[in-house]
Image (cartoon, rainbow, N blue to C red):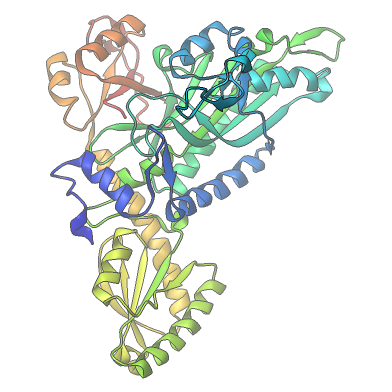
Length: 492
C-alpha cells in the first residue's frame, strides 16, 4: 500500500498529492479547481470543527448563517476590500436556462439577466455588515460576536487539494465592538485560540505574529496570523485574525448611540481558518508510509486486526476484540475492528498505516491464549506486546504519548530549521533550502516587495510569541536601520 505513495525525498509535491488521494482524504471533482472531500477526510474536518466550535463558544461567539450570494454593489463600498478580491470573484449574471433553439443543448436564457449581478461569496464582510446595520442601534446591542461555518469561492487559477481550491470550507467570525480596544483585544484573543488549537490538537508548532502591510487581509488595519513550517521547510499560513477598524462600519453606515447619547461607528474584527488545515496536517506529520494523525484528530484512534486460520479462531478472537473495543470506547476512544475476511493481515496493516491510525492492535490465537496483544504505534512504527488486562488504561496513556511525540518531532524539526541571517548573499543561498530566516527589515513595503521579487520569499509574520527578536540592526536587503527581526520564508 505505501509503495503507491511517492517518497518525500524523491518529489515532495507528488508525495503530498499521492497521500491526499491514496489515504482517501479527497479527490478532484468534475468542476475544475474544486474537490470532493471523501468520508475519511471529512471525518477529520468534523473533529476539527467540533474542537474549534467549542473553543469559539468559550469566548462568547455564537453561530449564524449568511447568504452565499452578495450584491455586486456591496463590494464597491470598501475600495481596498474589492481590490483584494476582484480577480478571484465568481459572478452570477443570469437566473435561468433554456433549451437551445438550434438543438445544441441547454443555454443561458438571455431574457433572464439579473438586474444586479451577484458575487459568489469569497468572504462575508460586506453581506454581514449590511446585516449588522439592522441589528445595531445602541451600545446595549454590542458586542456582536457571530461565527459561520460555510463554503466560499475564490477563483484560483492554480489549485492543489486542500491547500488552494476554487471552493473550500471554512469558518469566519465577524464581531462588532463599541471601542477600538475591545476589537483589538478580540483579534488578539482569536489568533491565540487558533494557536492553541494548532498546538494542542494538530500537534503543529506555530509562530504567532502580525502580517506586514503587504500581506494583510484586504480592508484590515492589522492582520494576525499563525504560521506553520511544513516538512519541506515552506511556510503555511494556517489561520488569520483581522482588526478591521471602522472601515466596514463606515462603508455600511453601522452606527450606535453611546451612553452619552452620541452616534458612534462600531469597530470590527473578522477571523477564519479553512480546510487548508487538512493540508497542514498531511505535510507537517506524514511520512513515506502515509499519514501520521495526532490522536485528537484521528477519526479512528485504535484499529484492531484479527489474525486467524480457521472460523473457530476468528470467532474467538473477534469476541475478545469486541470486549476490548467496548472497554476502550468507554474511555472515550474511537475504535474499529477490521474483520474483513477477504484481505490478508499484511494488506490491512499497510492500509491503516497509510491512513495514519495512531494505534494498531493485532491478535492471533497465541496472543489470545496468553492474554496479550501486539500494539503498534503509528508515529514511531514501534511494536510491543501488552497484557490485555488493563489495556484500556495503557492505550489511553499511549495515545497521550503519541500526541506529545508528534508535536515534539515537528517542534524539533522547526527548531533545527530556523536561524538568523544578516547577509544578503547568504539569504539568497539559504531561503530556498527549507529554512525560516530571522532577518532585519526596514519596515517599508518597497523593500519587502524587492525581496519577494528577487527570491519569492515573503515576510511570514512579525513574531509576537515565538522567535521574538527586538534588537538593533540593518535591513537584510536595503541596509537601512531596523529595530527587530521578522520571519522570512517561501510559502504555500
